[in-house]
Image 1 (cartoon, one colour):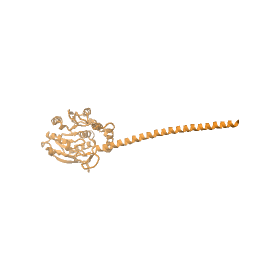
Image 2 (cartoon, helix red, strand yellow):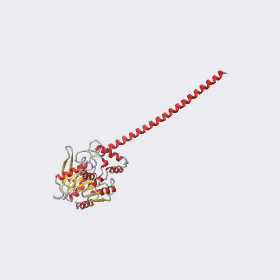
Image 3 (tube, helix red, strand yellow):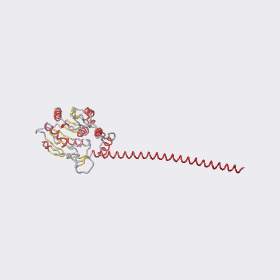
Image 4 (cartoon, helix red, strand yellow):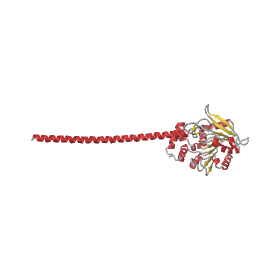
Length: 342
């Protein structure tokens, strides 16, 4: 009797042990599955993080290259990043004006090239210092207004900023370093004892440089003429991106950030609308109502910040283009009216 009972108990024990081992195996397998799932989740998060990191690096690399390209000029035949260097293919004699080419030394390796165009008569009414916009030169952008100033009997000094035309260098800082160029030219005109009133005329970036020079370089011209100014650099970059169907959100910020790093300035603080608060001389502002880069809200804000006698002249059908070429008669009449109060 004891043998069958012992066998039975033995069998029950073996069965129970076998069941326990299966349970243990099942539990172990469950833990393994859970661990694998956890590991997969970690790996997936790591892959997402790596993909985000790669995307951030690539986006910043593109922005860095883009900022470099937009602030550097490449000469003909030169293989390098940058937009084509603005040259002076037209000179004053091509439009019937006599001139003298001059250089203003900055240091041993840098200079500004200028053209001095004397007034129509031997006794000038004053002197105009002219500054071009970004990506332009005195020969490309300043001859048309100079012809009007010449007819009004004003001496004209046309300037190439550093990086363009006949001046040294191959970079632009979009009006920041150019403000020092403006101050240098004003001091040069004073040393030459050029006839007063001395009036500064700038197109687009040239206007921004003039405003920054008045605010931070402490120059004191008798009057200024601002044509197509921009209010804030960041907004100007955004508008240009939108014009070529590139999303401006973050793209503009990255371009300004990397441009600032490369050129050693704070582009986010480059705001002519703020500089305007420091202007204390008579100011004439020319603006195209259809300007695709700067809207009228920004122009009105800048205009309101000007502290001295001021005039705003709107060309209703004009975009961001040289306004003297849009309506020369209207442009000249506005200048003549302005000069009467200078």
